[in-house]
Image 1 (spheres, one colour):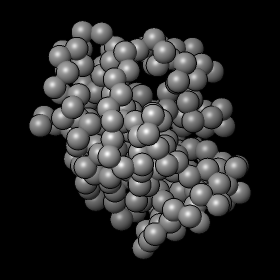
Image 2 (cartoon, rainbow, N blue to C red; image 1 turned 135 degrees about the vertical axis):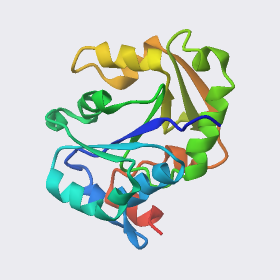
Image 3 (cartoon, rainbow, N blue to C red; image 1 turned 90 degrees about the vertical axis):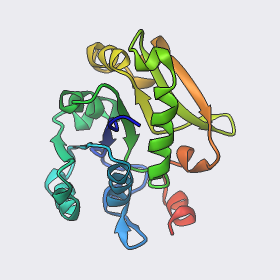
Length: 201
């Protein structure tokens, strides 16, 4: 396996549907934010946490991971416009040829998920040679999930897309390769308190 791609963790929002701030919610002995970030770090990714709302508190939650040397905190001025704009603003931090995008509220994504998706993408000639915009993403039971892995060409399309255009709309102009996955953690985003209570360890 080559060097692992960078990973943008989108963590800038209000968590309005949850009624509680998701990054700070407990997840076992950690927080949801730390669990999500730690899995990507353990995979070997350089992780860009794209924050905004309660940014200083968000930074403090990650104090124990900062010694990794692979954690970048990005304070998005566009966080109040939604996750898509938070991700767009963090693209300037990307230094790898390809990169992952994952929301903070998907702590069931594992280190192995990042590694497996990277290996699958490396075996795709169009993705590896950057001969067109390509994205890889897992799907479970017919539902597309995360993390999404974009090559450089796909990243450029995202970067140049107009503000306000949802990322899912941008991906309609990208070749998206769906890989069947063996566990549903890749589609389990936690948007409500009931989902949190049913999924937390």
